[in-house]
Amino acid sequence: MKARYQKYLLNFKRPSGTSRGVLTEKETWFIIIEHQGKTGIGECGILRTLSYDDRPDYQAKLEWVCQNIDAGPEQIWEELRDFPSIQFGVEMAFKSLEAAHPFILTPSDFTAGFDAIPINGLVWMGSREYMKEQIIEKIASGFTCIKLKIGAIDFDTELELLRFIRSEFSARDIEIRVDANGAFGPSEALDKLNQLSEFSLHSIEQPIRQGQPEEMARLCEKTPLPIALDEELIGVTDVTLKEKLLLTIRPQYIIFKPSLIGGYTGTQEWLRLADDLQIGWWMTSALESNVGLNAIAQFTYGLEPKMPQGLGTGSLYTNNIKAPLEVANGKLHYHPTGAWKFNL
Image (cartoon, rainbow, N blue to C red):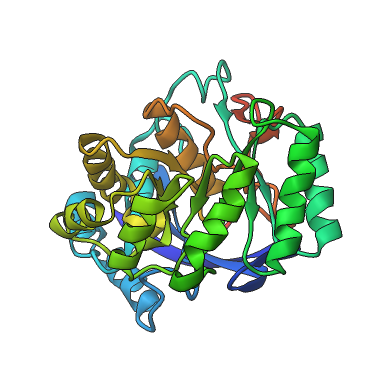
């Protein structure tokens, strides 16, 4: 068995804003395994400044994986507890190697083109005009759930945008999620949640920065709208600590980003805990290329999700890997007769 890795820079079609800054490109890495005439492809979707494995020895660890690829996915995964994005890339590559088609990892009605996955329409931070333009475009495109990144512009302006949506569409017509990416301070968060609750929001992701479990627990207890943990899950790799975190905070929802929390195996650890504690969840991509997005979508479909998922990032880039994935009418579709173009 042979393995190699390759760096790839994804270029955004237009700068995309978050509360942590503006993104113009996204670094990713591919692991390619070759064995007995077959090829397996996995993506290690690191997010610099956010991923737990954003560290100087990242590339050296990829080299180690390729040198030890014969050990198999389970043993390699255990050796990569501090490298969740590489864990996912390794799991993905082995699934790809074992599959009849390198990009149909788990055949289903989704990959056969008979069913699609409802997703939210993502509205990036920017000027009031730009955000309003995106909102109108997403609703016109058939989305019944939209997600707004908030926390980077004036809060009153963000409230005005929510007021605009609700003046046109009721909560029955359009579900609204907001993502603060930890932008609120603990002392102001509850007041801001109270103001946001006036707009019948579905939920808010990560209102305060991760790593403040007692403060987050108080917010989850008093909040007027459901809170979803996102970044809070990053770096919690031991299953006992995962359970302790959820028991301490008691969130209404948690959000799974497999590239940030240890791939299939890491996500399933969180999923079992969430189900035991009756915590809701949904899956979100973490700005991977279409290779990673495809793997997450197929994994998600197999879990029979009950609400729109965060899988609408495939059209962000000018140089994405060509794939038969398409967003139409607020859903992610896979076209089995379409072509993949992976030439790295």
